[in-house]
Image (cartoon, rainbow over all chains, first blue to last red):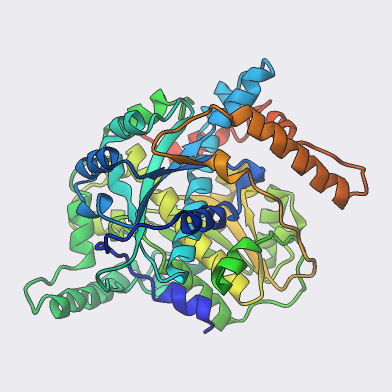
Length: 246
Length: 246
């Protein structure tokens, strides 16, 4: 296993950071590394907002409810973004609303932003920095749009906090290889027994970490998560922004 | 710039591979590196199909129209996947259709699969392998679903071909840092002039690479792309699979 693979295998999310801020050169390297990720048909359908204004950070923390959205080395917000394409079209007297409204192009923007973000995460960890994705910015997507001044044909996908770790984090075991990887045809044959086995391992993980106080199973966490709809407003907001018009 | 960042900055898509196939151990390391990427609330909402059957590869090549979908070291297909969650729920007498149908959860599955794929891409390149994403599998998503036996509550997002490169590839300059990165608030103030400048650089890139035969601008490529809808059926197929029901 080479050093890069070792680094990827050792990934853990970090949720507590020193007060030290990233310098401009580090921010630039992280963004440029993000930009080198693959992009569908060279479309580069995303932007990245770096949030340094303490009031905006505080407001985003309130949306997320996570303290580390405010306290970190730097907060990036990844935005799926066709605004530049729409402005180009407008200059040429062309309309692109129908194309951006396609589900296909919603997928492309979401994927482009995600690939870029994961490159940034890998780059950050290679520098000894810690990261955590902030999906909880979608708790109030309309407010994030307002706070960051995001125009139509964009939507805020998630945040990524980066910084100097002040905790170690811990690496949670993933679903077994055989469960996630299928050859040639998808099969659910062993799904439930594989999950039962995995549940036991995850319960052990929590027991060890909490001196026996907690012993959740993965399946119980998932059933709790899927027992109620969340972020019902996301659909209306992305449509308002010009997406999913089919 | 450390070695990992150097590797990320040197990324180029590879579209021609030696006939040599990846061995099982390499496939396993690539999948496990993918699995270590961050996942929203630990949901792990994706699966990966490795395609080795020559007939299926041929059929996927026909969908994609790209020869390297057939000829590579290994073909992975990334699938946004809530099937395991639905089976767990079914066993517990619970229904999760409403939750999976939310736009929020469509985003989560798409992001989870993308982060995993980008980890795999980085891992592969660290081993001296080349990669190329295959978004063109979405040219006929229904047929991909049929070929790979994908059940409801899943959808095929893209392929990723990996292999021993038989070409060098080339690194295309991205949009300028200032264009993609905004501080605190989104601004389009310099967008069109930045793109004009970038257009000139991209035209130079093509001219140099083709001895002057080609000199596309980025903006012309984008306007050509956005002059017609594509993959109009993606919307109906993902809905058929149980997504985007809001």
